[in-house]
Image (cartoon, rainbow, N blue to C red; front, side, top):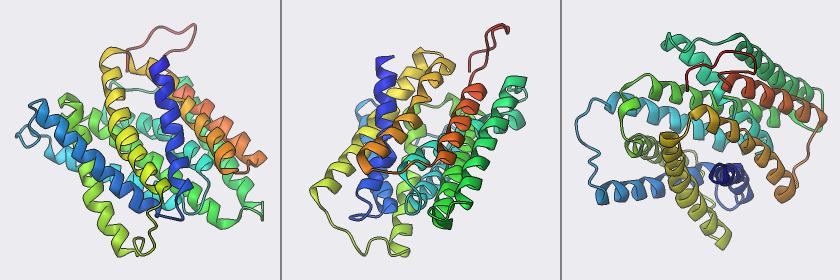
Length: 296
């Protein structure tokens, strides 16, 4: 419980930290560089633990697809943070369990959704619609924030479909470090050139805050926290761990308001509550009074 609480705090700070130094370094360049730092650390870890990344085990096709989806996820996060707030992004990014559940329904016949999970999907999407309709009717918000919110939803979808790919491919039997290396390496080699091509490297100010943020993102978030998460998944039921992960968007909203002074509209608060409730129902394989389901 203590470890999961710490991970949720770290993940909740993730978008806030990127947004905080966006004027000194673009979010896209930040994410590209942090992916490179983390990929290098994973390579060192695999070397010291005698793991071979290039061994032929039939995972490269699925690994490339997961890497592309991971890159798309954070491309959408980076571009979305240019328009919307970190608190909005924290909520919309964590719609990923909705897309994971829908994807598993299609590709894994055993992963059938139950009635309460379909209800959760409906609540989550109604929450998204509530936020968008409230933003469209509020002239203070404007189309820019709605564009960023939409990119947040697309990031959640890319994350969800990446999870489906891992679960339904040869990567389900691969070492977590190898799967993570596929994701981080692909993101670095795709997003760094994109940052250059789109002119997002023209204005970079390497202030102490930027260096501290890169270390936090590259070492703590993308390297240490992800490896700790994978180690927890080997010991505890994923369904129980997921119950704690709902705290992440809540922390993201709280940190965005406290550290960045981000505003909260009534439509966003209402929609976010619907989204979080929906995610909770989708991720719960059982409800009180129902027969215990298989561990996810």
